[in-house]
Image (cartoon, each protein chain N blue to C red):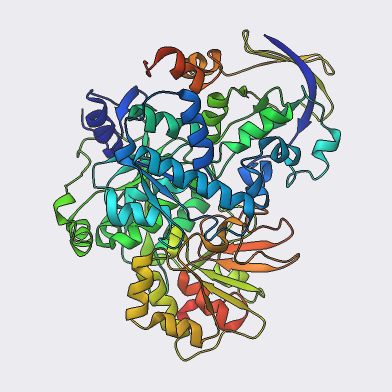
Length: 416
Length: 165
């Protein structure tokens, strides 16, 4: 019987013939942790008291509170740094960028099994890896033993047909899909993306979609690796890391979902759940106080490029705060070389150092009571941006940039 | 093992941001302090009403969102006996087992805040003493039951030196 990508990767890594529903113990290729989850993982690892077998595959990132706004967090970050140095693990200080962006830029390969102490670890499915978020203790065990147990998920085959109309982006596709499925519509499943639109997507677009798989409860969101993946890795000087990852023709799926993207329009997720999706026309005119362009969902070069295209020669509406955060140091440098940073600053925006920025509600743009933010991030839960009395709308970078110019939620199509 | 306590009822899709809000991020290495704020964004008065030993009861998809294990850990430290919900988000469910917080899948429609519940983990039964109703609990997967019985994943790995399924 044929296999899905999830079944293939988990079979290979567990050296077994695994299918959906099986429980396997699998060897893990890459392990990632961030400053919010690493201290607990390290304490659990110390409590375990075993030798650390996978330090060479372990990467620590300080991206959530970067640079630290508080003494407690500075101490946490120092604790992470000292531990990483002690065991010989990779450590990425504030300013390097977001965990998931750097894992994809430098470490994860197609066909890998990766785990991370962050729910958006599913991002790496954009390059054909099986990657999933776990808690600190599970990740601590992965660092200690180099493996962990997994239940092989059933897969949903998501067929994306057609081509994206003007003003509609990968972000709109995944928001629409989550709106259709619901926030728990794919709980425990793997989403496997196919179809003409998926095949034509750049890796950056695929990363945006895979990143949000967890927002409908999925364990992973996976694309096949192909020539686009090879090119993406080659640009990073990693062509040797390419490997073709494909599902078998006769693989079995729990469900097949079809979406013709040609008929899509720009959409947003309204407060306070990601599946509360509305077409742009339904919310157009909603006043915004803050616009955030960045994050592991939409802080890559192509995201900044489309935002800059809209903002070039225009001004951010008076009273609106525009915050732009490149996802990594590499993206930041590319944006500098292309003049995008100048566009954002001239338009009246703020450009902050690579990292998670205001997405997690710790620093760098906490909302006031009653304020509204439109953001390119992946979550709009109550309190997410530091204030339960504020509202968050999720959208593509184009919709966010158009909204920054207008001062209210705006349709990006008139700017493109 | 039998546990008795009052129910505190919540709706669907309670996120880890409701359970442990991001604005208390700096308290993650001070769990007893973080535990004073559990469920604050779902019910600001929760910790005033709650008594250790009580249960959290919810609708579907409890614990959606971030992978922060601090969410189930803070509930456990606050003294929550168990969380009973129609369904759980994947990462939260596994985290809860790993830290030794019982999480039970059951039809919670008949339970209201203030009901006195008796939970028998061994029998997989929730008895609503206030209403005189018995509710069956969906069994916890065997691999996770083993981990829960060892007191969590750290104790499990310490005892066995490995993961054996």
